[in-house]
Length: 335
Image 1 (cartoon, rainbow, N blue to C red):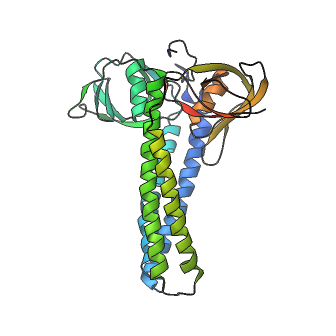
Image 2 (tube, helix red, strand yellow; image 1 turned 90 degrees about the horizontal axis):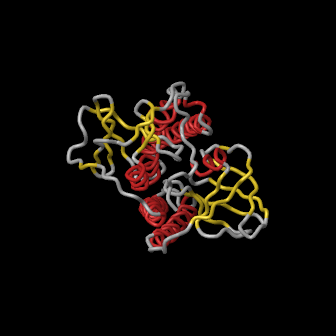
């Protein structure tokens, strides 16, 4: 089914962005979560420094804390300062709709859009670039970019020229199968990155078990268990990542009307919505959607529509999303 005419969540044109459902509380929650994680991981970095200076705990433990927690602290700190909190300060202003994207160019993952005599350069993952090439429209607020149906903003930067080596962003329609395939490939890449991280954690755990000076300590015993657990987890994620690369037949969408309350946001920024719907067989059931993608729940709460890949079944979980948009997530149906 084509995306044309599909109702999706979009910023209110000419009205402050704070009026957009879910956006403001999501930014607030992400700021608090990222700030909390930045402080927590920063304290673990400090602990690693203390252990390294005073000794008595070997080399592996302080090294692991410094190797894992330092980049984590920097990442969460940047996310809080330059991401959610920075965007939150702009929500008193309206988004600006940019249509057509005449002159837009792309170099790898970076899209350069001409805007007011400058170039707005933003890095977009493959599903969002695919959606942008097909729809030719986006919303801009300061350096932040948001695509139709996608509630999570992407931070860009204004430059005097597009990225070197860019080529025109050509129009290219997208089928449900292709959009789903790009999403699955992106998830597969994330899983493979997680595999590498788990293997590194496993190696540090085994190193800790062999290096820790106090051989009768519980650290020696449980670090070994942790190492085996990480290795097993890496193997499982690798299998899932390979499965996601399988080619699937062209899917079909099933549209459902949903009566729901407002979307709720957890401490970790997970957005879910609960409601009731009627399945194609006439059965009325409960439905809970969202979690992995905040845009899914936000779209359902704002439009009252739920799109499911395939035919939904009571008591089962289905893949849901919005046709033509980089929005996917699970929907669980009651009995």
